Length: 310
Image 1 (cartoon, one colour):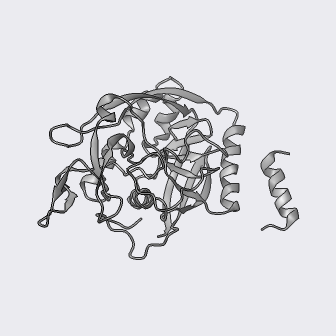
Image 2 (cartoon, rainbow, N blue to C red):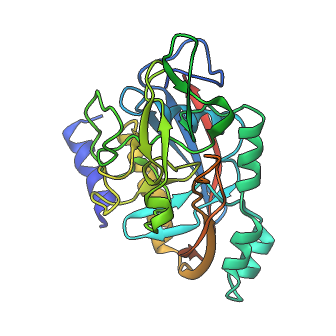
Image 3 (cartoon, rainbow, N blue to C red):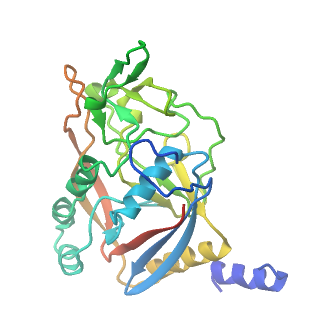
């Protein structure tokens, strides 16, 4: 008997049964919104409910909700499987082409072709995403420091412990099985390390920050183990499994993936945009670094992300 079924048996025997700045959300916001992620693997769907941690990660939760409400995450793939982590949020799913590329070592080309970066930027340019990061600051009529709206950036304020510029007023959630973590591609080259910008942790606060700690966009990871090298120091844990039933459903998916006889991973080399700032204009500039993903050869799909409670 496997561990999951044994756990269910033991439970049965025991009788156990983000404040929006520039983009609107629902009128009534709660500290703990809810979301349902529908995964699909091998033509079977798995609905997993999450509790979002607005009290500790308001900016990250707000961005996740805005993207979900705009259908951005629907029909995307898990593009990178690391030890105890599945990463998603950047690439769309085409069943026929995915299957073909999985058999000819062309997964890097597939991901490059199906990047959702342009769609993400369209949402930002259409003012459908809230802003918390700016390339420069300005002053109002009273001499108070304020964001320079002409330099607003699409990146996200990093709500994690090692971002020392971020004011953390609530304890971070532990990173455990099933949690969702804001993810970003780290770049330690000098021009990014020394790029400074301005972030707004609260509507009436603006502070100087380092670009590398505030450059997340749409990616998130699903932690698939009780521990991970991608912890709370450098990634914001912004959602937790809502119940034992949600954990069971995620475990059902994990078991199906691991038991599927044709499941494996393919190495995929992809150039990802980590960006930076122009030193003179303080505007965002494109900057690409090469990343190597371990992509599933049989697609694990995010069919939809639905916000069920705001």
